[in-house]
Each structure stands twice: as C-alpha cells, then as structure tokens.
Length: 76
Image (tube, rainbow, N blue to C red):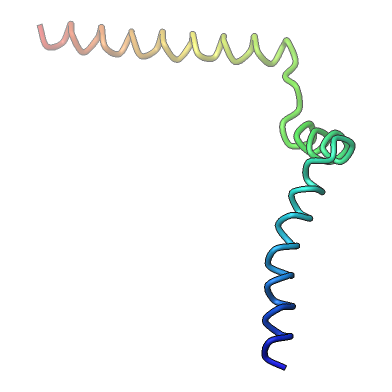
C-alpha cells in the first residue's frame, strides 16, 4: 500500500507542473485569456486623457516653482 501511494504521489508531482506548463503555453489560450484580461484591466489610453495628464503635471510643476520662488524671496 505504501509503495503504491508513493508512486501515485510522485507521478502527480511530476505530471501536474508539466500539464500546467503545457496548458499555459498554448497560443490560443494565451491570446484568448491573457491578452483579453490585460485589455480589461488596463484599457488603452485616449489621446485626450494623455493631454489632460500632461497639463495637470505642468500645473503642479508651476505651483511648485511658485512656492519655491516665494520661499526663496521670503528667506532673502
């Protein structure tokens, strides 16, 4: 009984990773599941969204520069 159980466990330990590797490397599965899931989680950015983000960054930089300038003028 013990030897049969060990043989079963060893075959399971060897078979499971090989099967998972084989399944995950199927091109159709990768295209259907992984790429689709990636697009759901991180949709492509819109052009207006990128421009809005850049404008916001510029605004923050300008405010930071103004604060630094005011701090420098007050300390002088």
